Picture 1 (cartoon, rainbow, N blue to C red):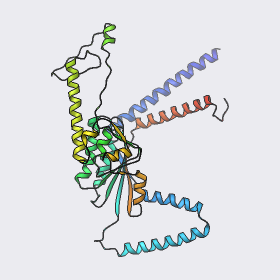
Picture 2: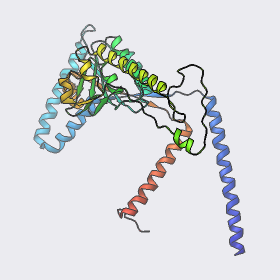
Picture 3: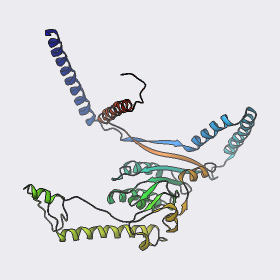
Picture 4: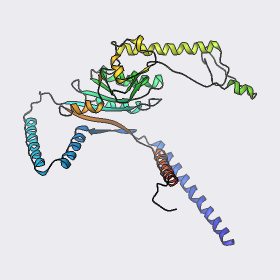
Length: 349
């Protein structure tokens, strides 16, 4: 018993020393990283033509027989040789092949993806030409007005340089998402993609009666008549509610004017009701221009254009990497426990 007690004490001391060393090391690394100004991330480029060709080659290698494959290889060699000869004798004045730059925007409430979007558009603008095209695959149910206003402004940078912009919506572009979409020269949508919701929403709980019931006072001090209209903890007044509603109506009016400016073919009075429409109905309302998925649109261009997927990857700092590793470990442990509970594991306890 005495041995176990001594061993436990030794183990506790050892663990304390190890934890202290880890804390010191992490503190030193964090302090040193603050002094270094590092790049926030980098641009990654994928040639989508190559991806499509790899898919095609994989299917051919399985489906076609040996003779058919040999014939295809011969034909491909002839095409490659002819293409090489054309490039060799091509004059500097001849028009180059069209380039299509593909961006992905997956929106959340705060339009967080705008941080990457601004970098991606900046990169494209360094060498894009008016004969090229930018396609953005947009997915967003909307969110904060100012955040999506900034995201729309980033897309406007392309329009200001007369760069053709196509917006493809495969699932949803509503509210702030549609604010972004209407910047495009052309809007495509899948048949059942959710489009529209040109409206403004605000909601908040009020705990005033709960606080009053428990004899808890809440005091709010402001300078300016309308610095605070409604509050979560104070008693809301009819005057405050009226002002708050007025601000919502003003935001809605700005939203309607924005859509009308970029899509004059839309009957704004008819569609600015906060409703949503599926792709097929949105086409009838002129909210979109064509029923087509992003995959169909890009596949149709792969023979005539060079297609590039552009993405900005953020560089994680040390603490973010530690957090990601910890999160992954927790997820792994949870999955194992869940599989154990469900009886889907292959190991014995």
